[in-house]
Length: 317
Image (cartoon, rainbow, N blue to C red; front, top):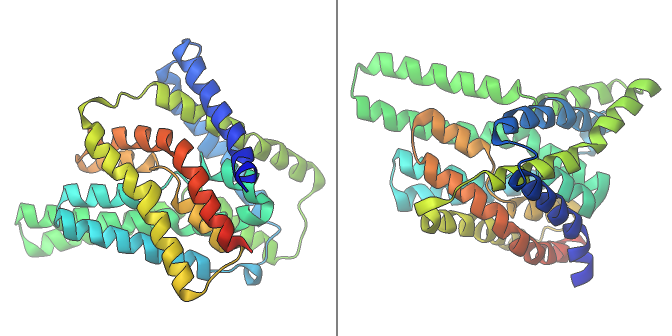
């Protein structure tokens, strides 16, 4: 079993290592990271998402594993708020504990381990991932800030609901969930993609894995962990171990198994996603700690993912 677990992880590690090396050699500068990120998120990933979901019928999707994932994530989110307090710090850590790198690491890794069937399960989750978790975090941030301002109740409520509405809209009109939804809608028509378009999308989609993993390595090389490593290590422990173990325990208790459950557990074990940093920057809370947590959790995931993948294999049958 160990060899079957390590085999798909080796190319992931090598691609990340190459990205790290070329950044250290100065072949790619940190100023290029936003442009590389745009290529991955705005071009390559949407092509892969749309093409995969364009051949999937809604009635073929299983939403029970996705519900299990969000139940586990929201339990961890709520527990973090109870322990950390109803504050911006608590909201930032709760989001870091639950929001994973489902695209840059999740897509290539799940594709290597579980194939296209696994990607369908992952994309079903991704279509709601940002909407559910970012909206939950926004609600906490906005309520905390409204309480701190202690201004006019009517004005505060209007501002809060406008912000929440904007987050929900932006979570749908986004380069990750939008092509998933568009692909599903196209699939329901029963039409086939024109061969030329299908080949172009396939070519772009195949570039997602290596490009995204190189970008992870480049980002790691340009990140400084600094004095926040202890707090970042605690966040990494919750994200990489506590969340997937909780999901596995719930799946066992409910008697759930299958490929989609294995994919959900593997996805839960992914490192902290970069969107968490963008979110904390928006609200001015915990940026340095979250930035360190992204770097540390990504590095440690190379050690913890094989363990969690072995656990996920038990649910796959």
